[in-house]
Length: 275
Image (cartoon, rainbow, N blue to C red):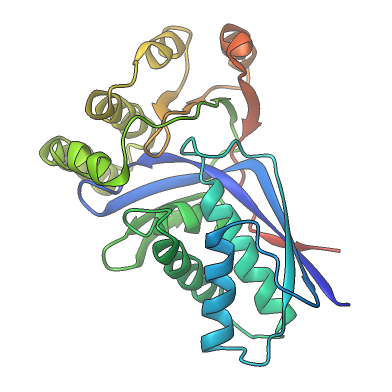
């Protein structure tokens, strides 16, 4: 039976898209591999994957038969590190190849975002997360209008990830709490769009998210004191992400190693198919 493997990246937030609809994220060198194989019966590890399958089958590939899907992930789940986007991206890419579809990367993004909304694993559709995961580098998006406003390569700097799980609030309360700080998020959104002040925006975003959702800012403060370029809460938390210089990342990593910190780096690599 025919199988296809696709690999997509995790990521981290520059700007949370919930308050204003404008979001930004970059890709991390923490990957998800999704293997889709023709099968006698369907096997889906998650509802989001099933929604990707249903969407592609209904719209593009009615002849698609049953498939079995396996997921292997380096990304800690449920902590704001874009694991859901990485999984839906890789699933959409693998199914598209299995069906011999000639679809653009943007169409794969649209399919993945649509499926994520149906599966209720996202509030805004998370185009920023999905685009960074699929395309690599940094993206700035308008999630309400489903537009990529900017995309750029970044220096592939070291990143320290402090994975956490267990959000305090459901989606609706997260939305309400973040939206209550809309005017403050609007200020840093303008700094991002007008000045491309990426790293200061990332740090300020983390402080605002922490304030809205009740997370500690101590990891952010400690990282900045030791020379981090930026430190923030990724997505809706509770994981922290720290961008460092190549000459000081080890010291910052040692500070958080006992909290389960993981070393990674920014990647500009696009999602790809495995042999």
